[in-house]
Length: 386
Image (cartoon, rainbow, N blue to C red; front, top):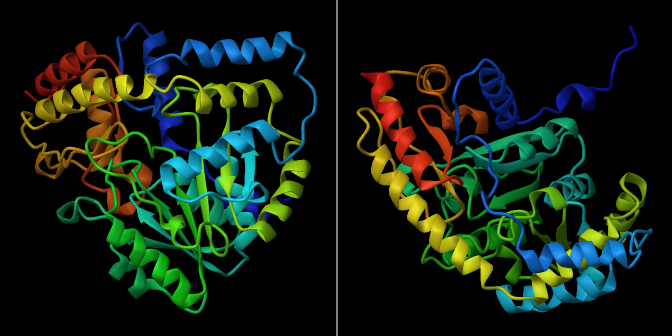
């Protein structure tokens, strides 16, 4: 048999979709399953944004557009970054992508060679490790410790930097822990990158999903002009997961190459989706604080409930919509506990090890669901252990 490439054999998927498939199979068998595995807001796209996308289709805005993105959306992103990050990038730095994931992929393709080392958080978003493996790079894991509120420590990064280190990936608010890094920690990472001539990719897809805590970015230090790359998108805080729309802010020399990446991979991001994005950034923003008020209530409810389950303990996350309880006192591994909850309680969650080896002893709950489902899940979990 003809062999596939090393990259094809190195890349891997996400456990969330594997658990979802198991849960759906149980549902086909007549089982009632409560879903806490998928990281997707349980709200619909705001009406004004949806109407803008529909109007764009009706206005025949369904053809090719520049690979770098619509000028109108790039200008809206320019205003957005100035408002939320404190600096105004040049238009030539802004690239529109079909979701944030291509931004992760393309930024790593543009910076990492086989044999290079990529530093990222563990537990962390699986795509970072998957793309590192695909590229033939070595993933260097920085453990996120519960005693440090699961924040990435610049001192831990410094210890792991070698001559082969090419890239540091930062994610705050963080998936799967909901942790948020401080300004001093972000500044420390940016300084390390300067001192050692390393790129920094900052995944900020949850940047507006915070609970009484300010969001900081390492890209403010060089304004994404030299070595930092800002990634953000519309999926989470505009409830647009299926629209597939994101953006990158990168150094100009990289942005020039990224245009060709887009041409070769996807040609361009869908035009009508981009017009919806223009409305998202320039239209009524009241949806976000309302959504976050609802998420805060859900967060408080699930944290309170998880901490009443014998063998469970859980810190309150400061961002995103994930709870990351410690389940070590149950005597189970993360996978054993996740399987137990799925098959004995009808509650679908992810094992912490789905996000890396340092996730052992934890579970991830996505509390993007109803208060009723949260209450029912706590009861079912308690009953399953009794």
